[in-house]
Length: 305
Image (cartoon, rainbow, N blue to C red):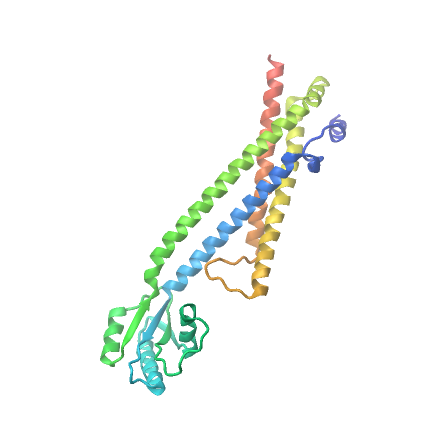
């Protein structure tokens, strides 16, 4: 009897799982799943990027050696080496790199353009300082050491940027969480609306199943499984679309060779696949629960009316 009911249901019932292309609500659910997956994966990447940026700021510093009007190229090289030796004596520092003159010239291009700079233009020599994990830079002690060595040096401790970066990152993440919450609510509402509309359209079928002796729990389970399948299919289509879009964006960014340090990149991993699967699973659960509740409520009201 149960097998006969299922076969008849597949032939007669026009539920979203059977003809998704003919159901506008199925398309709406797929679009919402696309937006939810896009929001969820972007949120995950933003948390990773914020942690990476914060770690880079906390563990690096920049030392700028100011030349005077009488400093020649040899003198600048000697001052840079002296500053490097002083920095390496600090136990908190793991490495120091003397950046070439071309690096300082590249920093001026946003303001001066691509015009060639005079060779005798005095430019500061930059040193990139790498701190040991969990260590901080003793700016006061280093400043005293540089002064004793007769070096005009500015120390940029990147850690003071961390607080402002974390505050802005948290604000953006809270906004992303709120957007994902709203999309999830919209998905739930759309699933419930689609289920109620579908059950209303299949009211005759539900009445027939009830009249031939099918238990309310059996009818509810039959409808909930069909609507859960429809919700899962819509979620899979939307999640796959968002996954493909982010993958193409990451490939495009790599092929063009454009580095944007303020927009986090997207790299595919198992964690992203697991997060993408959450959306169709969520839609299937919402659809199943809503269908079960709606069918049981309708049948029980008929039985005791």
